[in-house]
Length: 241
Image 1 (cartoon, helix red, strand yellow):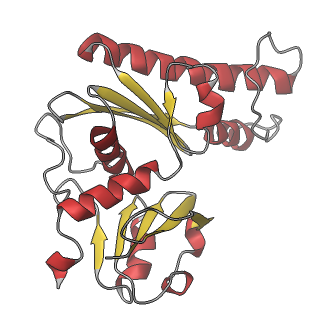
Image 2: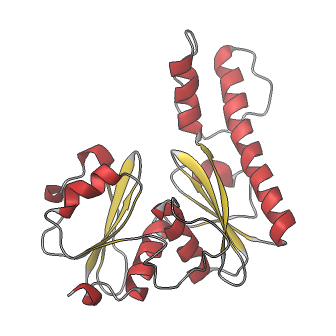
Image 3: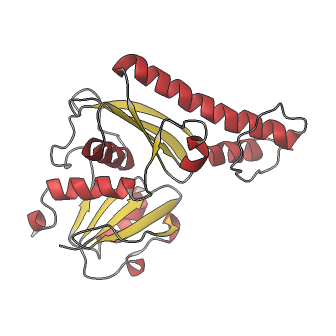
């Protein structure tokens, strides 16, 4: 049965239609603008949401609906090794998509507003991970928290020399620093879990892929695919009729 798939993030929401065979083209809009009027009527909705107020805007008018959580993902993952009570639905969806399509153990690095790491072992146990600010958020923090540092746009190039002016110094510190942080996270994961499949997703994945050529850069529907797998495993939408 067709259904809408949503990945409601802090900054942007991604929307796509599952037609029963494939996930269609992704539409994006600012999460602050997400309302029922922005969605095609009459379709069941399955979503991962990290912005509770955004989901509340949908609840009154969109039925049936499925909101992904650690409690309703159809047994696709084992959460017994961690406290899943505050685990973000986007991270759960990423872990499900990893377990459903790649050799395990594996790691997902989602490069967006925040950079997150999700780890799944060969027994499909979610082993946690890490969260840190993304490159854009780090730029905004320096701009808003200081008197003179500029608000820099993102660039695709990886700095390869010390910064000889303020802009270049910020780019080296933030961009190389972010790469170093991801490398350290993966190093810790490797020490705990052994050889891993590395997956990169999110809007900033192309930048990080230059520093991690071993990683697989997945299509932008990766998180939505995790939502779909969870909804199907939970019997949605038939289970709510």
